[in-house]
Length: 294
Image (cartoon, rainbow, N blue to C red; front, top):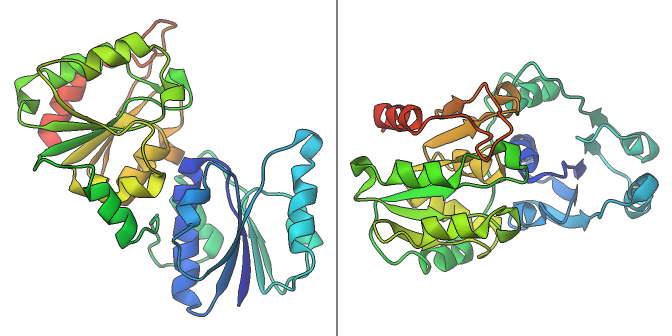
């Protein structure tokens, strides 16, 4: 069975959409997948089972990237085309069956995907990695822990808690035996001086994994961690998908649709002042929720 999967662009959406692929693999053991994705999400698919081809598309002006997708897929007869971008492309390809996803803002993406697949089975996100990824990740973590994974930045500043509050939080005695594993990409850091205050604090034990490896490398690392704390981001969804207890700090984004899937905790700010701390969450509130859950 030849399946064309036109996936999301963003990392977080891609992680959630892996629930659809894993369901289809379970239903069709001999299926072969061609994946259409963005450069940002390519790493997430590279170790998936039943993968035949990845088509990486860079967005172009006037929607010309869709022409490239069509050219890459038109000469093959598909058994199933799944389009999560709600484009016209799926109607312009030769296929026995097509499914076009259209989302809403009223229920979680996984619930929407379950309805989209018309299944009563439970589906969940799961990104694929292998022993090479695991060995490379384990080589970066030398001490015994316990560990907390921290992803303080997203691609939108309004979603991020202030670094000063992270520092205040982790200086509490509750965290004195933990090693912090910091992850993210440097281009998302709005103020490197404030970030360095966290990195160089002598009272904190820190492993800095900013800009290291690919997203798959974080899977075995998240599995080692006692819990994760960070912004609404792709890394948050990846941590939740590994069953690492996740404390997701939410502000202006829709936690109903994009909250971490599974037994995790959303800490929501309902006030977004135009200050250096757009997430108006007190350290005391975050600390008390973590203490209650851990």
